[in-house]
Amino acid sequence: MSLTARDLGLFAVMGAILAMVAMFQSPQLAVTILNMSLISAIMALGVNMQWGYAGLFNVGIMGFTAVGGLAVVLVSMPPVPEAWAAGGLGILLGLMLGVATILAAVLVYKRMTPGKLRGLALFAVIAVGFFITAQVFGPAKSAVQSVNPAATGYLGGANLPVILAWPVGAVFAAGVAWLVGKVSLGLRADYLAIATLGISEIVIAVLKHERWLARGVNNVTGIDRPVPRPVELQPQPWVQSLAESFGWSVSQTASVVSGLGYSVLFLIVLGILIWLAERALNSPWGRMMRAIRDNEVSARAMGKDVTRRHLMIFVLGSGVCGLAGAMMVSMDGQLTPGSYEPLRFTFLIWVMVIVGGSGNNWGSVLGAFVIWFLWVQVEPAGRWVMETIPSGMDVGSDLRRHLLDSAAYMRLLTMGVALLLMLRFAPRGLIPER
Image (cartoon, rainbow, N blue to C red):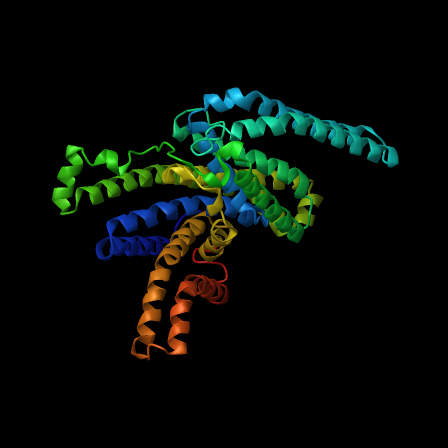
């Protein structure tokens, strides 16, 4: 789908706004907005594949993003030998027993004829399997979590380059999406939304409470980064020379250079994804997916396997979200399960897709830039407005106190108003599907 002059103009306006942020606020803030907009654009691209291509209403984006972030820990962090010696084999054996229990239950369900006997057999298999798994897994988990809990208390990772965690995060998220899709894609749209939301909350609960996996709410810090840290760049002569040229401090210049390094990596990934997504959308496969989206009954009548195609696009879109989650954790240098909230990682991404233009890949990218810019800038702007309006009021005024207390909610109010205005005056988005 080619970009028109109007579309290019919208991207140019967004670029000019970021340049103004760098000039009048700070270059670090502009680079930070740019990087988070690029990551959000990748997430929005994954959601657009599911909703814009196939009409799948997935509100479990947060869970797939978190799985991608977990992959960074499992791939890049060094292993903890003491934890492995204390209970690593027991945890692996417990996980294998749990998988064996599930497979045995599925086998019983498929091989036995429906009736009370099958129900009793299923109950017996699950109960016995759960008991044996708990006896093996529980003590091993406690032993691992007791190994230096202040610093580690988990098994660690494979100590591989962090850049490898990005495709691994996509694979992990795609694997979880395949399991979710096999269970829930036969449901109606509203039930699919409930199922994906519930499963994403389960994923976050596992990350928070299974400390042997990724330290839970204690967080994993010190994750290796694909780009040198600002502290590592400051002693470099070329960075100091660049600081003198721009009249910036060395620390400021190093921070901007490090951030731009991430920008280059993220732009490469986003460019590859856009190229692949555009080719897929304009191929016979893409036309088939849109035909399924527009009239599922007719597509089934034409012999299309709708459930299989839905599963395919669900896995692809979730894998892209997992890739973005891995990129974000590698940029932050830490995994914090408590920071995964539906408002940030589900609702906001959906707003980006809707505002940008559902069904249009470039629209999702533009929507990500617009909405993330508003998300960052509206809060300080709203605080300034709320402090300016009552400046002439009496210090003890109830109205003044109410306005000052309401400043924190300007961000949510602005997002809601922006979404309502777009749905009213441009319901197909800034760059609509053609």
